Image 1 (cartoon, helix red, strand yellow):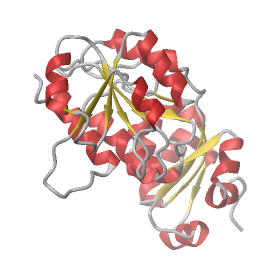
Image 2 (cartoon, rainbow, N blue to C red):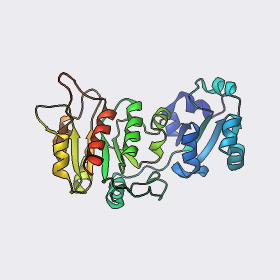
Image 3 (cartoon, helix red, strand yellow):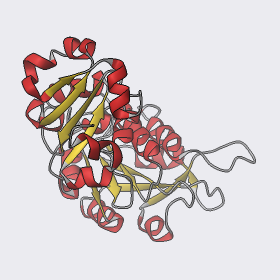
Image 4 (cartoon, rainbow, N blue to C red):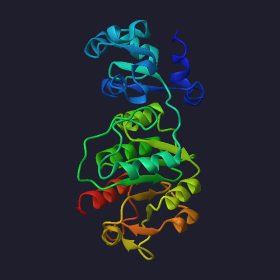
Length: 286
């Protein structure tokens, strides 16, 4: 029998969230937690690990009886899947940040100065870089892999935070954490109603660039980026995979932009579009 709360962790993500826990898998992601992310080692409730993973991460000396060592076959029999790369952990969820806190961090950090770990639990900073301050805002994403990929792209291009509406999947869902390569534990984030997010950005004076494939009504992203050069932080705003940004969200963006594509192409995957937009803003605008 799978030990409780592992039975919940592997069968009911919503109940796991209600218990104030989330699951991480893989040595790299757990190492982030051991290094201080998500509350650090004290936030780890329980770990299932192979002897090899436990040895490499020094789990038994660091976590004591919170570690259950199992063979790879026993791990797969317990979990029902083999994506864990030798280690799975249950971790207490950090406190939810406020929208204003994440925006304030982006504005105060300066170019390339976002948190090393989440605003919810750490004051560490990444090394400064020539990247410009930028946030990511996402409306009603559906696919959990897209959420994880958006975090990975945000981290790669130095975004200071990710603002998700409450209809997006939980960023701390196990698959999202894995797809993000653990960057969801590094980049500050918050979930809130999308109009609250856009209103908070407006109140802070942050320009918002709504991304859309609508070529007939919008400027190219490169032109918008040129016009905003030197104006401070911006937020790249992306919408639902099927419908894009809602009309209300689009109307509230200070700018709306498109990414040029080949004739006949409909659109880009939302995470891919975000990566292109962040690259345009951060790298090509230097």
